[in-house]
Image (cartoon, protein in one colour):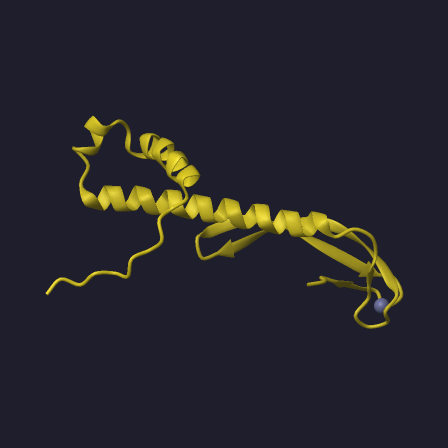
Length: 116
Ligand SMILES: [Zn+2]
């Protein structure tokens, strides 16, 4: 008996248009796809999905870091502390990303903290 995965909702038409362009880049023209084995198709698809996931994660984290304006209260003493944006490499499920995050320093407690 064939097993069917639950039907997913249709992708947004804007995303489908982008995916058609990406498909051309990843697999080449339709004539080239005929010559690819499925393992290659799956591998290339997965690589693109991972690149997209890393990009989305980096962008979202950068927006969060840049949206924090002004001083934040120190979790220990409550004193308003100024912050900076720092970048570090983080390994996520889909590979390494350059994570931007807000780092605050309390001069009173001599400690760094990362507000959520
Ligand atoms: Zn403090």
